[in-house]
Length: 294
Image 1 (cartoon, rainbow, N blue to C red):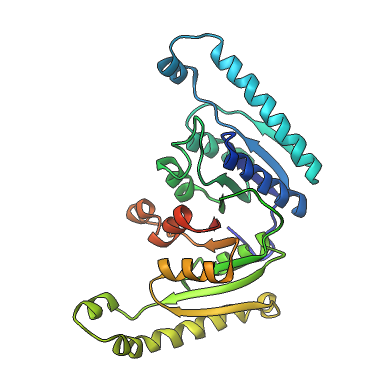
Image 2 (image 1 turned 30 degrees about the horizontal axis):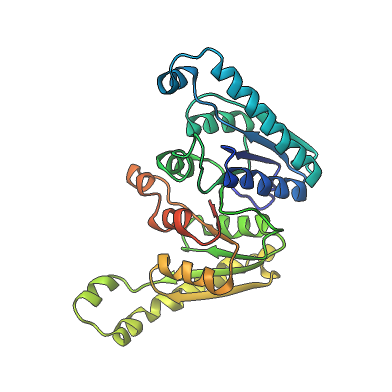
C-alpha cells in the first residue's frame, strides 16, 4: 500500500517478448532509472509438459526456448542499463503467467508491477485475458498496464477518485509515478438512483438539480483530501463531473490528452474481486493510455 513516505524501491516487470511486452520493460526501466529502483524482469516459460502437449515430445525444445529467452532478456537488461538502471536482474520461472508473477512477487516484494496491455506471443491469453484479471485483482502492489512504447516521462496524468478508502493512495501513487506530469484530479458523481429517474422520464434538468448535493459533497470531500499539508502545495487541476465514471473518465482523458490514468480497484468480497470494479476493469482494457490500478 502506498504510504506517505512510499518510494519505488523495487519494480517488477513482465514480458512475453511481444512489442508491447517489451515496451512495458522499457517503461519500467525508465521509472527505475528515475527513481533509482531495483528492476526485476520476468519472462514466464510454459512447463515442459505443456510444451509436449502442444508440440509433441521434443526433449530439446525447453532448453532451446530457454536459451532464446535468456538472449532476449540479456538485450533488455542491456537497454535498461543504458537507460540508467543500476540494479537489474532477470528470472525465468515456469508455469502460468499469473502464478509465476505471484510467486516472484511473493519473494521480491515489488512496489510496482508493470505489464503490457496485449501480448502477441505464447502468453497472449495471459495479459488482459482471464489471467490479467487475476493479476490485477490479486496483486498486493499497484499494477501499471502499458499501451505503447514510452517516448519520455508522463506529461498528463489523471487521478480518478471515487472518494472511497483508496482515494488517497490513488492520488499519492499518481504523484509518485507521474512525478513530472501535470496531475488532474477527477471525480464523477451521479444522483442516487439516477438511472431509475431517467427511466421514469425525469428531465435532464430535474436530474441535474437532484444531483447537485452530490456535487457539493464531492467538492467538500476532495478539498478535505487535498488539505493534507503534503498535498496542499501541489499544482493539481480539480474536475468534478456529472455522469457515470466510465464515459466521464475516458472523455476527460481524451480531453486533456492523458498519457496515464490512475484508478483504484475494489477489494474485499468475492463478487468485488470477480468484477474488479467496473470502472477499473473498463479502463484497464479500453483506456486510450497507460493505466495504473491501485
